[in-house]
Image (cartoon, rainbow, N blue to C red; front, side, top):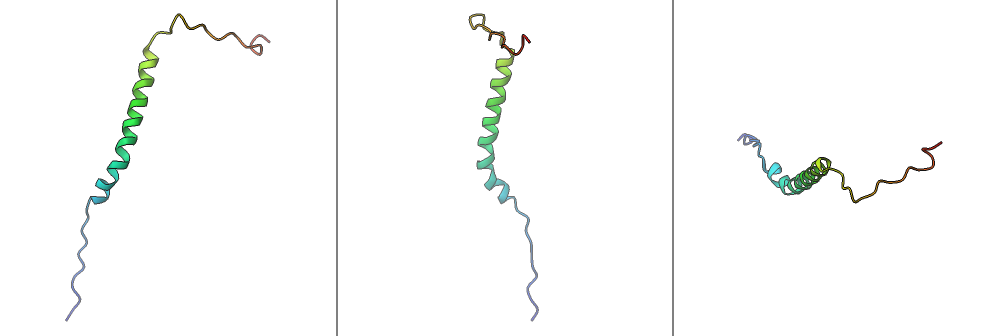
Amino acid sequence: MSAPPVILMATDVGLWMALPAFVPAFVVAGVVAFVIRRDRRRPPDPLVPEAPPSAAEGQ
């Protein structure tokens, strides 16, 4: 009797098992990108004074 044939099946179960780890990371990165874009479009607040020039800049 001969050995039974070896059958290899390619499955995507590894991808499905990895999704719970990657989805929260993409959500956090998306929120950070959204906040950065929103803050860059906002005009500067007139009530917040600018930082005084440092002593090194005047030399």
